Length: 396
Image (cartoon, rainbow, N blue to C red; front, side, top):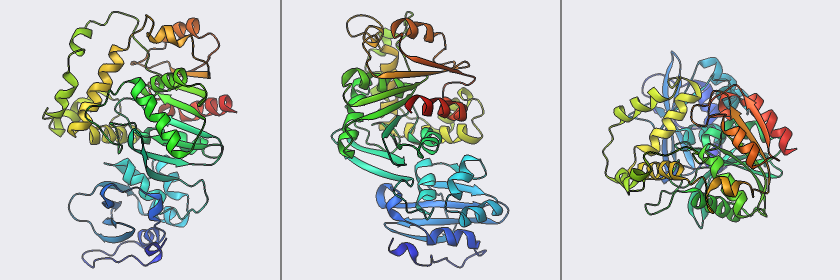
């Protein structure tokens, strides 16, 4: 930390910022946050008192009066901000307890909390950009010990595994990655965006981080990617945890002929007004105006509203739908050959991957462990305590 210890400057227009915000900026460590483009404006809102912007430029940060549109928004009451400033772990604790709200950009918002935590131990939370043979991949990581890599679902980002990182970091080195095409990672136009492509990106990340072997945790599409990785190179994969994994449809797919056309590339030219797209997403996600659901909508919209992000989303969604169930390369045929020890976590209320799939997995992969929870499609967010207790028990 060089400029990090200097007193942040405040432009004297309007109310004076609370001492708690100034104290946070004094702890700013630029090594712990990855700022795309090197500049960001992060709004810090104190309920009933006002708003100020932490403006990051390179390795320095300044506190200014709120102005224009911010890249990320962090809001809490004054008592919560004081606790965050007084306790080096306070920011993430307040976020998990919903006393602190993070909107617009989880990568920058939580990255700011990590960069101002004041923590110095090797396992502290950090955000990084990693150059790999599959392009530049964005990760967040915390903890020390055996590596665990977390892979998000369709339309999600690494942020969906923040509860998992928090729960497992005391035991493992936990790494959550933005797959290519999503979040802050590169979004190549000509990429396949199917399970083999994503599995190759996971192996490329392991190579760049110098990791020979890791546990994999995957949710939804990320579960399908984890299965593919386990089938392709058992030497690199220790144990697999599959949270409501996307599995090949066993019934007839009536729109298969349509999705075999190059429709995903329409995302490059399709004009999608934010209000229209956001309204549709909010109707599909229960409770999308509060807590993790609201943050998840923000994360989805950030990528989807870019042409490359839309193209990646459409291509990945098509590939999930078109995944062949049977035949020599069919998922259910190959699943019987999955060698790593595997645990499936199913949500009894999951409308996307119904728990009825469990009986098919039990027949195909009889050695696998199964956990049923009263939740929907994202167990690590909807039932974090039960999910992470099962994961720790399985990996131990």
